[in-house]
Amino acid sequence: MGLFGLFGKKDAQNPPGDKQAPRPRSPASPPPDTEQQRQRNHRATDTARKIDAIESEMSSEFVPTHLLTGNSQAAPEPGQPGNALPDLANSTDMLLGADLRGAGLEVNASQAAPVLEEAAILFANEQDAVAEQMLRMAIADNANSADGGAEAWLMLFDLYQATARQTDFEHLSIDYARRFETSPPAWRKTAAVAAGGRTLPSVAFAGKLDAGIIKLVERVQKIADEHQALRLEFGRVTEVAPVGCGLLLRLLKKLQNHDVSITGANDLAARIRAIIEIGRRDETEAPWLLLLEILRLQNREHEFEETSIDYCITFEVSPPPFVAPVHRSGAQPGEPESAASGSAFLMPAVVDNRTEQLLAAIDGHALLHDPLVLDCSRLDRVDFSAAGQLMMGLAPLARSGKTIEMHDVSRLIVALFSMIGLADIARIVPRRH
Image 1 (tube, rainbow, N blue to C red):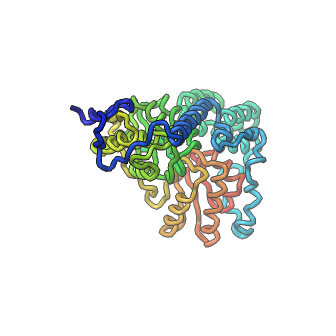
Image 2: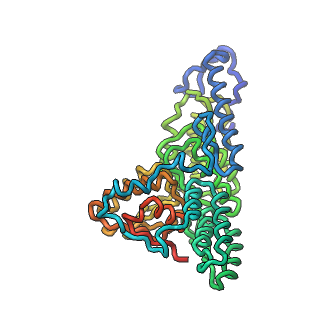
Image 3: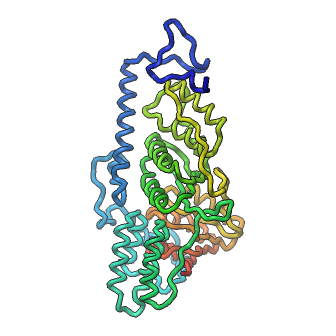
């Protein structure tokens, strides 16, 4: 008899009078039709419906705020960013003082055109389609100008690079070469490097794993459409919630035929274990099933089977079978990655609005290095509010006399940093295309 042959479905009852539990640590099962059970089933249905509602919005550019927060009030219109975005640029003097302004921005113009600034804000808020439209309009409007709207071209290249749209990047390259009669920017392979020397497109999850990860889930799916192998980073996840577990579980199930390499899996598994308990039936099985999937992707069969037994005891259902993961790329799941590269601090692919751990790591690196060099070669996107938090976190270092440099910065992020005043405390070096 197989390992799980002893565990039947929920409708498989023990013979009358047989009081032996599957394992000594299993608590007694509650009566089937108690009010507590009915409430639990209702919560489980609500959780599943919430996950379905969030996923149904993934074809949109971003998920409406009321789905993420439960607030019935509609999100503000994209054309009204002032309602939600703080006036960070005006706070620079207060943060730094006049004596620290003017660190410099190594670009042709320190202030981008208003339309380019607005495109940068839209991109920071993951409204990629609108940002792309504005950049294309800027290119068309400046077709006969002295520089041909070159900055808009470069920002559009960076948008396609950040969103893993290599086909669109190559089509733009043809138009660029025809317009400027020079070589176009090259597609950059800035993602994580696998053991075999191949590069893997990478997406980093951070902060709380909840409904807010839907934007990252959509980004992973877009990458998976063009790449068979990819990498997911969970080292900066600090907390998990059932809805987030359900969304990530569905994503991983859709990637069953992909070569998925993961880092920070041990930390993620620990976060999941912290919210589950053997014998306690929560509103959804998603955290348990996600934990099993993480163990499967790490090829940890023994721990998978042990956890499967606990899952059986808790929910009285058969667990999913163990299927060895696909690893054609040669990457090692769970392989740690250092944030520091030589004397430079390697910035993550995405900086969201939970910057505490990132700023703490930068502060630690700054204690040992002067100047403080932030390598932004793989930094694709900075959330608008996170840009302000980053500036406020770096301001004390600047006030203490530390020289701060940011190298290889995307043109979209350069425009954002310039607008909020970060260029006043750090030397920002754009990417050389």
